[in-house]
Image (cartoon, rainbow, N blue to C red; front, side, top):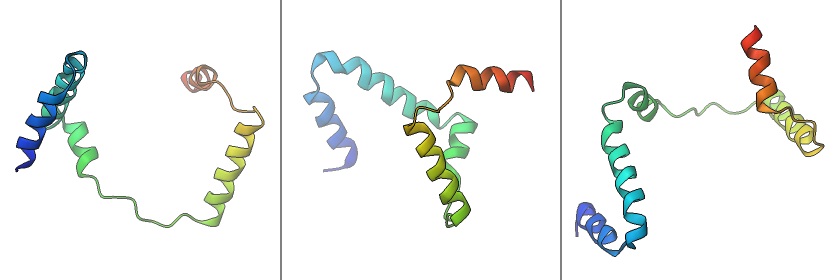
Length: 84
């Protein structure tokens, strides 16, 4: 069975309530080939550089701040960036 035949079977098995969402997703996938930005993201090489100890330490500090409730609200960050 081909992949497209398997997709047809999955579509036939969908509950009617999920058909609209499946259609929208398939339309998105179909049109994604026309979008140069999405195509560039899809075709970009995978980042395979190892993470350094400084990056590791910085990420860990960020998570610790988040767990302590010291994270900033997105609206606050966005407002700050808009003023720069």
